[in-house]
Structure formats: C-alpha cells, structure tokens
Length: 323
Image (cartoon, rainbow, N blue to C red; front, side, top):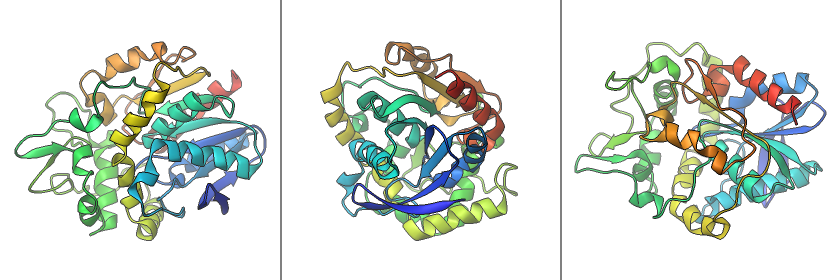
C-alpha cells in the first residue's frame, strides 16, 4: 500500500494515495483500516482516478485523541474536509463501508460543495429517530445489543485486545458471507447482534478452521499490526458518540442528500438481519433523491469491498462514469 502521512485537522493521518485524475475518497469501517480498500485503490487508480484511503481517527496509523467526545460524526466529516484541503483538492466522490458509509452519507449531506457524489456500502441513509439511539437498542437480563456493549470505555477493549489476531479472525469471518446464508433461524453467526452479559461478544462466535478465501494470512497480519498500534479504542469511541451525534444532527433535520448517490449491500450482510432494514433501503429516495437503483451483491457479507472486490470496483467505476 502506498502510504504516506499528512497533518489533517490537528491529527497526523496515514493515507494511501495512488493514481491521478478526479479524486475518490474511500472511508473504511470497524474493525478495518484503509487496507480494506486495497483492491479498489488499484482498480480505480488504473481507471484514471486519484484514490485516497485514510485510516480514520483512532485507527491504525492515524492519531487517536484521548477524549471520547472527539469521535463524533462531525469530527469525522471535518477530518474529510481537512483531508481535501491538505491534498489541495476542491472536491471528491466519497465512498464508505460500514462506519465509513455513515461518514460518507453525512459528508455528502453537509458539504455537497466538497463531496459532489456519494457511494455507501452496507449502511443506508436513515432518518432521525425520535429518541436517542441507545434508548432504542434491545437488552434483556442475559444479553445486550452490541452497540450498548460498546458504550462503557474499557470493557470491549479488554476483550478485543486480549488476542488481537483471534478477535479479527472471529469478527471478520462471522460477519462475512462465508459464515452462512443468514436465513431466519439457520444459526449463521452474527457479531453485531445481542451480546451475552456473561460471556462477552467473542466467546459465542466460531473460530474458523481456515481464513476465508478473500483474506490471506498476510492480509490478516496487516490488520493485526494496525490494531496492535492503535488498539480498538478509536473505533469503539465511534459507537460511544451515537447519542451525541443524534443531538447534533437535529440542526440538519429535513436536509436531504442532494448529490448523485449509489448504495450497495451484500445479500448476506448482517445489517439485513435488522427488522425493517429492507424497508429502510426501499425508502431511501425520500432522503436521497438522486439515488441510483440499490445493488445487492450475491453471496457477500458485511465486508463487500474485500469479499466481492471485482463487483464493487465495477459498480463504483460504472457510477463514476455517469457523473
């Protein structure tokens, strides 16, 4: 990966930067880094685009502020605006997967002057819920939803950092299409669901006998090294700002994403297990008027840019040609 460092919005940010032409900005999810876009970086750069993929704040090679409140969605959008400034670029197409998709939607919503088109993978654009998100997520005497499990600083960090390699193997596999078809009641594992209060998130997940075909041992080592450097705190802090994001986003109530948009999701994505998710996807044009027809990637789970790299790259290139 052609990494280099830039000073961005008060952070030392590690970015991959390749190619020449109109800028495409790629934003990763959790637990990932810029490396998750390795296939798209090569494909888009070969098609005459400049492609930049940052490690988001608190991930991998990018600085992570100590204050939890510094990981709000507004800070992330400001980082992307600052990154354009540091690159000397006026505007970009912004693309994101998982948390990166949330970031991409909000960047296009708030700064269409800088982000003139958006592509999101896995996470649709959603309206403002009537109450803070942490009041919506389910919990029982025995288990809590994973986003609630992530709220208390230090708890998930202790579990995940005990054996970083095993943590990544379990989560990346369990949320992938390789884990199973995710049909109702079929037992396909899901790391982003209810978490046992007694056992934690990782213990109930299977330990795969081998890595999935889309993740080599060398790929896994890159991720392990990244999270050995940064820990998981930065990524977990994104979840700790869900209610704060909800409060701030009231200022933009009724605003629509007014730029061309593309949405992709694997048909085995864990997000499709959430009740009503397909209805949310179908209703997106009310929030994103210039949305293209959503693309469902057959057999792909939550890590589509890695699981189905050619299909994702082809979809992005087709979208870019229409702009």
